[in-house]
Image (cartoon, rainbow, N blue to C red; front, side, top):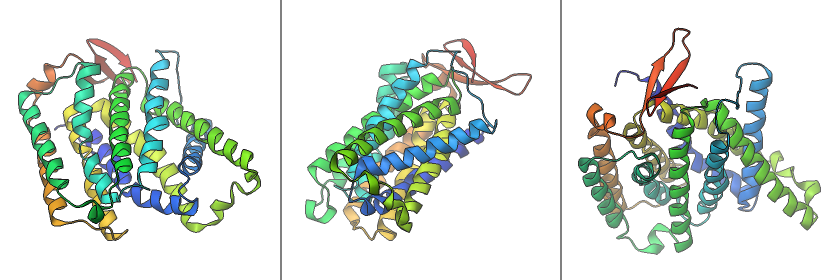
Length: 330
C-alpha cells in the first residue's frame, strides 16, 4: 500500500477503541452501571472539545455542499443506537467475549457495504467469511459459567455490530461530500444532546439533579470520561472516518480487528477476566479469516466495485474523492 497515512490513522483509532472497554467499565462502576449518564458526560466533553477547535479556527465546517440528512442518519446508528448497546453490553458480558464477537464486525461491514454501497466481496473473501463463522462456533464451545456471557449480552453485542456496520458504510458514502470533522462534529453533537436529555431528564424526575455532576469528583470516573470523551469521541472517531474515506473498504474493515486484540489483552491483564484455551483457538480462527479477507484484496477487486472512492490531490493540496465518477471536495 503506497499511502500509509490512512492505515496508520485506523491503527490509532482501533487501539483507542480496544482500550476503551477498560475505561468504560471503570466509569460505569462509579455511576452504578448507568449507561446513558456515562455516555452523556463522554459525548458532551467530545462535543465541547470539537467546538473549541472550531472557535479557534483550527477547523472549519460547510454543510451547504451536500445532503446533511445523510450525516444525521449516520448519527442515528452511531452514536445513538450503537453506543447505548455497546456500553450496556459491558454489564452483561466479559470484555474478552465482547472483543471476540466484535471481531466479526468486518464481516458484517462487508455485508452491509454490498447492500448499501454495492461493494461486493470476492469469492475468496466469502470463503474467509466461512472461516470466521467456524471460529465463532469453536469459541462458543465453552460453558456459560466460565465465560460470563449472558443471552442479553450476546444480543447487545450483535446489535452493536449491526449498528456500527451500517454507520461506517453510510459514513463512507458521506465522506464523498463532507470532511471527517464535519461528519463527526454533528454525530458527536447528536450523542451529547440525546444522552443529556435522557440522563438529565431521569435525574430531574428522581430529584437527584443537584448531585448530577458529583461523579466527576471521583478520579476513576474523571479519567474514564476524559479518555472516552477526547480519545474515543474526538481522536479515534476522526481517525477512523478519515481511514474509511481513504482506504479500500476491505483493507479498512480488516484493520478494524486490531481493536479486538487490544481489548482481549486489556480484559485479561487489566480486568483479570477468564480466557480459556478453546476461546483462544476460536479467536485465532476468526482473526485468521479476517486477515485472509485483507490479503485477498487487490486493485482489480476494488476497480470492480460499483461504489468506489479514489483519493485525489488538487493543486492546492486539498483532498478530493471520486464517487461513481464524480469528484467532490472533502
